[in-house]
Amino acid sequence: MKILLLGGSSFLGRAYAVEALARGHHVTTFNRGLGAADPPGVESVRGDRDSAADVARLVEGRSWDAVVDTSAQQPAQASLSARLLRERADHYTFVSSVHAYADWATRVIDEDAELLPCPADAPPEQSSGRELKAGCERAVLEDFGAERSLILNSGLLVGPHERGGRLPWWLERMARGGRVLAPGDPERTMQVIDVRDFAVFGLDRLEAGTTGRFLTTAPPGRLTFGEWLETCREVAGAPDTELVWVADDRLLADGPDQVAPWLELPFWAPDLPEWKYIWQVDSSRARAAGLRCRPFAETARDTWEWLRERGPADDTDAEGCKRVPGSALRQGIEPAKEQRLLAAFG
Image (tube, rainbow, N blue to C red; front, side, top):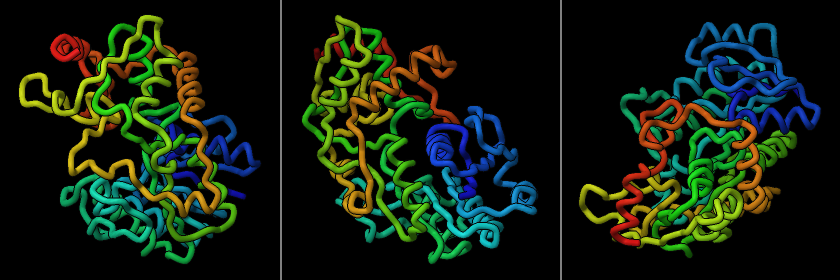
């Protein structure tokens, strides 16, 4: 098959490209070429997906069996590509997110739950990131056609080449050793998916010509936060690494050392009403269609190996936190703040 990847140079796009090449497909990637290098073996086309002229140049004289869009963040981006590609490709996979659902994290959701109310022509300044993904979905379905489109609502992706810094932060924190702040309840379950498993499932469905929608993440209840941290410690921890568990309410207490959930301690989702079902996405339809998820220990080991092969990266600021690419956000708690909390509560 001839496959066009909108993105394709880092993390999810890279996982799709590597898997598609391994299956013998011809892969074209379309991106600006400003991030990671495209995997060897792809046909690289440089351009900005926000530019109608660049997208028109991409499609001129070309056609594909399928498109995989891993990079659209704005409805206008999705609409432009879907509109210009609808006569140039037979199938369109759009990678959305579980965040696009209105009730995500506040109740159990499945594919039939209600999406956030973002129209296909919504300007970015009028919507949040979660809403914009819902708008992107509507743009693809309207401009390419629901009868030829597949929507994959992704859960939290982890694995080698991760750009968000969540799993890498925990692995590198364990490797530094010492006493490590472990937040909340170690028995609380998590729901993450290896990026390679996502790409395998997505390509399986693409090759089958599947349309419709799948919530694509690991089964709920499969991994606890305690198992997550213990595995990170085993994979990368120094001999003297010690996990110090501190309850949610202590970390959330008002004061100068209040801890921001999720960002300062990646994947920490405290026991609050607005987070109650964050790890309870119903992915049974995807599993019935063939989704298979490898053990987290394998993901952690492979990610640690990638980090060691890559070597030091220029993604850590002066306070010891990881910068999130394309965002002002930072992942990870400042070491001095962690030590103050450990002294107070540990």
